[in-house]
Length: 297
Image: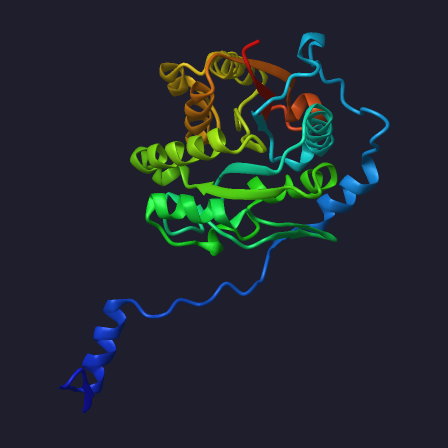
């Protein structure tokens, strides 16, 4: 017999009560989110500030303009393009904070939206988190941090090496969305929170980590990418239902953020797919759009 709060219980009943109330969960075992170091060392070895390795097509009229949002792949197959995207971005502007919206690939989180204030580490690179913004978003959503949701999440981790190389002092706000449990109500709250941050912080950049068409052959991939490109150009709400991508929630946030900035120009820096890039697996293609969004000139 055990007494609790002045009441005597048999031991087995007490254990049942404690379990029902929710006991302590195991603490996240790291003081940072680890990133596979191979991406870091490839980034250090393959990229040189003095030479562009990917033929990006930034129109001459966009030179001198400063993008405030963009889309980027998280597939390490196209790491050279990821590096060039960050290289060009650094050439165009300084950034203090990257708000990164990633899909949750492994459903490790407990909620549709997950946050963590822990830094990220890839090899010798450590990227800090803008904890004040994480806390603001967490309070707006009325959720707790969920660090397990970030563990080895390549939607963020694949970007860390190149992000750190070209923006070594920048902080990040990592946000993971579970597409299988998408809550448009919570995404709406998140959109408003991010718009608030972007309006008050000129050093912030919204980065949508996203891959597009998956698992199809050449013809189907091309057909899907016509619809994907049409949406990225217009960001018209009704077209989002025709998009083939792994981060629809992220695109919704991009749409809301871009609209809050007024008329926008979308510049396509690079569009490719896994087959065109590698020459392998023509029956199982993933496609990629690398973009920047500018205020309309």
